[in-house]
Amino acid sequence: MPYVLISTQIRLEVGPTMVGDEHSDPHLMSILGATKRSTLGNNFCEYYVNDAPRVVLDKLESLGFRVVSMTGVGQTLVWCLHRE
Image 1 (cartoon, helix red, strand yellow):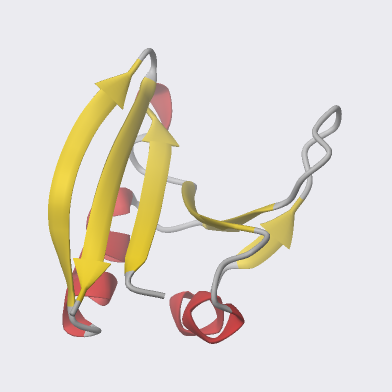
Image 2 (cartoon, rainbow, N blue to C red):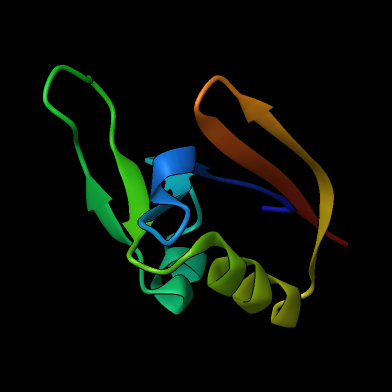
């Protein structure tokens, strides 16, 4: 999977960080130390780590991912990364 989206809410800049959805690469999620969670009211799961986004970005960079873009959506920060 060459693309990864990670996000966090602005008030949670120190974590947790959302690192994937229920269809994400389980091996990559294991490397990041992510756990799958389902939020009450959602019919889907997401992977989270307790690390700050900066720590997650450092881990993904060491795995060959590069930031393609970053934006703020309401109270959420989102990074898109790609690996060749």
